Image 1 (cartoon, rainbow, N blue to C red):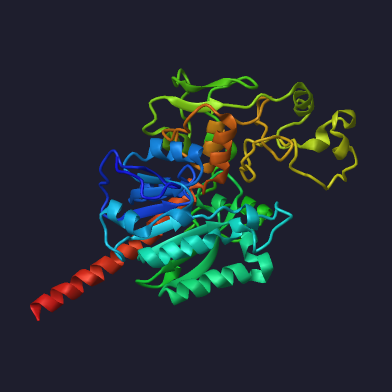
Image 2 (cartoon, helix red, strand yellow; image 1 turned 90 degrees about the vertical axis):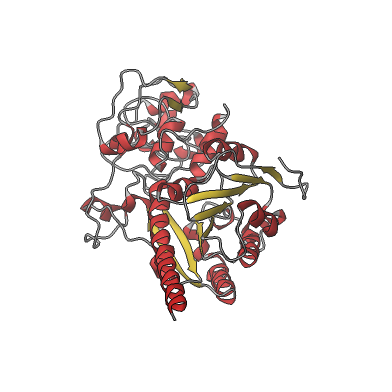
Length: 418
């Protein structure tokens, strides 16, 4: 392992070889949700970066083929990154990254464009200019579109145009790509080798039920598959007690019964991270009254927290919610706490486990969350981009780059023949 050139960056060199011909770097990677999807689409992940040591540990565990730069992205030197990846400026096929979204989230009531976290996109764009990738993908929450009247997004698009990129903004819904979760995210995609609109994938899943949750009322072209439900995603996982489960366990007698479950289990010799937080007795007393698909309104008033006794029936509709087997999960947050949303298991009196949350985000069972800190595991799951969405984007970007490669190869061939 080489010496550090910057004390703020902890470098880990790759332990295996990247086989894929098209290379991707993941900044603000977290545990690596975007990277998982891109790798599934056929990309080679050559490097990652994040400031969080726990997420870094998980990324390293699951991407031994990638170098990892642990530290603030503002301290990451582009020349070192390029040298480590063995590529020249302009040759990186795709740069992906989702600058932390807390400042843009509607759940943050103190949002401001001067917040340092909200300015992290500037460091990202600085690296874009230094690396000059062929394509890039930025992910964030829908709140980024409205902050300061849309000025943040306008600045990003203007900066990308100055750097020679064609860029577009798109909203993608996870449930429309086969993730069993209602989750909407904004993606800024850009290309300096063609039209950026080619980088946004079209939905693949639809049913009339999605219209109830803000989805399209009519089937989009190409959306030939039905959405995946909660039980289709997690129904095969073994029962565990409140606060129970183990980090590594044999599959025992449980068997997959759906296509989604079989896809999740592929290449997973054991069951990892099927552990849940222990609910306090007062919360257990509350959730036993909540039926499948129900919420806090099913809890006897004398058992409700003091603040919720004053709530109107239309308020806090997801708190103390129990998932419905035939429905979709609401957005998986960094805390699967019943006080914050519908995170109670459909048939068991407990919150969903880390593995169940990961399944609802699309993580394959072979993906392991490092260490034993449950809170960190839930955080890593909740911060990730749903894998099916990432894979769909990765496939679209890869097709775009390959098309460009063919054009370049033909031009060179004609030049040699001239």
